Length: 94
Length: 478
Image (cartoon, rainbow over all chains, first blue to last red):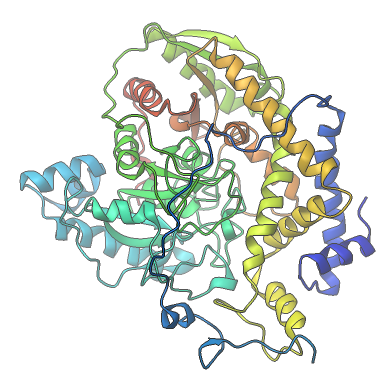
């Protein structure tokens, strides 16, 4: 069972503000899903390796050569706020 | 060619007619584009299939498609056209580049006419999680089209697009295809590049076709597959995707797993499924029982893995580089948390929370680590089964299309829609849904799944079944 404090802790980790009226339903719904998920804790998986990739592939490398990247003005085009040549954000500490 | 005749053509037929000179590509594109535009203009009175319709489409000239129109799920980045993934946080976002899958279709002569509505960030099975409103099922406007590629499926079923591009993470192509009475194919993981797809769960996301028939699915797939330098998980498909033409299923062994064909599947769906098995037998196939002992645990594993990956992928939506930014932030953290509060819908928040919890310190092994081990067992189950049979058959979805609002109050009951499709997603194997009949006047989907890279054989078998099932999709034409 996920309680209110746990919801607020996880929301902080997720950088997600929750309104007061979102907290209790979130606790209830997360608990219900985690109850269902708990069925996998009954399986004996001691010798089973975790899946890392579904299709057999070996690490693919490419030559490390410089290539053109997204032009600065294109990268900045959709930004909510721009200052000079960069993304404008508020100070980390007001 | 008169307008109804024109709309009756599959994409492959239309392309042939254009190349042969009996059909004008511009006329075909304009017919569909104006129908799509009318649906968008009708708002709640329409099906709400689209989030954007081109004012004027650039008509493709390259072959083989020679201008045939295509509708594209909102989550594909398309330069110059809004790509919002059904989310408020990306409202009005216009990407600077185009997804490889879309690029390849365009280079093959497709004309993009519209972007289709979807569940926000592809999280949903009913298309009710879209920030741009729910999509309605053309078979019954009070019901859902399925999701998350609900707009793509409804558009194809309603004749608002000849075919559409979608994505499937846990069933998001196959389930809406089933609920709308059309064909939907999830290819082998890695067969189609993910470059330019707004990511949900990267180890599961896969692009694929939603079409009126199996040949169109093969055609669209054949034009999209192949390695892409921009997606390191994309793979060279070992062979050309051909035109399906099998008439019989002689010598094929088809496996029916008890775990996915019993409890939890509604009676009308099971009846249509069993009738389809008889059809397969009539075509010469042998029906064999197989076991997928871990398949019933697939949903639990999926609802750890997909949210975990989503919580990481969606960290990029922070109000810095694109999309929404909360007004008057007091500091950086306040900007992040309020932007995400305002921009994400309820289901996306739930999955971000679930994924963050599962990955948080002290819980990783119990949830994510364990779910990845279950995934290994599910893949092994399939490998064992494919040692005995050629394909595995199940119903695509446990129910027919349900009422709008019926399951929105209970996330877990919504997740159960993915019961039959999630195991294949976790194993990375290809699966196709074809319409196999009606239950209570609503379409039922038959799912055929095969080993990795078995698409050609899978499409052939689906084609033989489709020819004999002779499903009539026309009642849905609006």
